Image 1 (cartoon, rainbow, N blue to C red):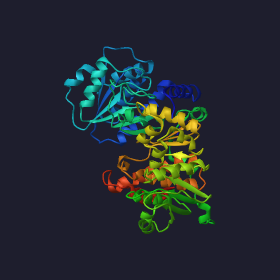
Image 2 (image 1 turned 45 degrees about the vertical axis):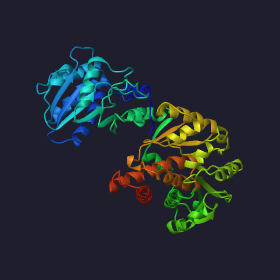
Image 3 (image 1 turned 60 degrees about the vertical axis):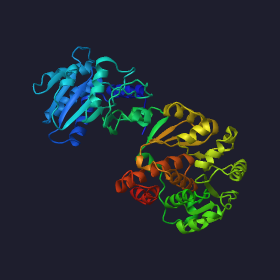
Image 4 (image 1 turned 30 degrees about the horizontal axis):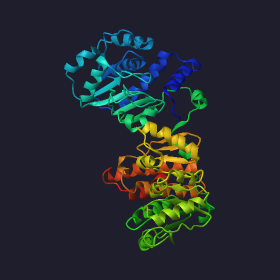
Length: 497
């Protein structure tokens, strides 16, 4: 699914109006109906709706939603800034329609602080849409701060008021804190970063019938990884195939006290379909690897830590899980990189060793996949002020080094050498445990060995990892789920594919 800028979304609205054709007020009606249907489907029969509406088109959506909810038998109350009569054309028309309904009370913003709310309350934010270009101040700022203090369910129409669609916030910004955001047709970039996404709650994309022609023909570098995209990548196994058709995966890692990381990566590679799987690890992990992963073959890498990286030419390699940073490991690893040209997967201590000298970055083979979390990224490439700036730097480095960067976060981003960015929306905070990254390394390396391209392996691998996490959280809860549960749930992800 494409991610468009606020300007592109505005142009999409305009293109739809001109080419469907449909009037702007009827397009607003369509958007309001989609919101109303969602609210009704996700509310109690005796829900009381309180809508706070601005003077622009987002407010116009709110006025129309209020009218439709009332017509469906719900109690509805609306708050507006009565001191400001400068409405957009469509908002003015919907406000007039609303005032003609005697059963809907309309109050001023100033009256809300002393207002007595009923039970079963949902507050609907329709103050500002994607056109906002400055911090909210004055009466509206006070209103939002008051609403945020209330312990009712809160729903934003299109985007939480105070949030920009495409950029970060100022520290002093006031933003409506939504439990759910009903976004029209598209994800916005601000939904996908920790600094701004925290205000959105759960995102629900509502199809309001915007022009498919415009969406198809308009270019963007930003995408959300959706199941439709995954189904274009996934390669189901053919009946007449054998283990030789699915690659040779070699996971290199482990050191004394960190063999568990190697085991997690190897098990994940096996569960993801690797034809033949090898674990190159120190001798101290031999017995536990052979017992824990009987389907994999052990390769000697040293005594208590990796001292050699001798592999066969047809291996696809993932390095770093529990590797350690012993000087002998470091020297052997860097010597290996100097003579290796095929794409590989680098994570954890492999990245930490590379980060000791910026010149080491040039040793990473082109089209390789690196999977840093924010601190590892900082050690590799330098400090940034926030996740928006981190992505800008990641795009520069992916292009400069001609590699794929899997930037791990709540919404992990895959950055390609061509500077396309794919945002993952599977996964949950239960995956924020040591070992989850090792599972991801095993998954991506296994896919790469099965002749998925580096881009496909990164996108598919991150999606699989998050989807398995979503299945696991349903069984075990966020606090209780383990990285091993992710591995077990991979089978159920493949079953739905």
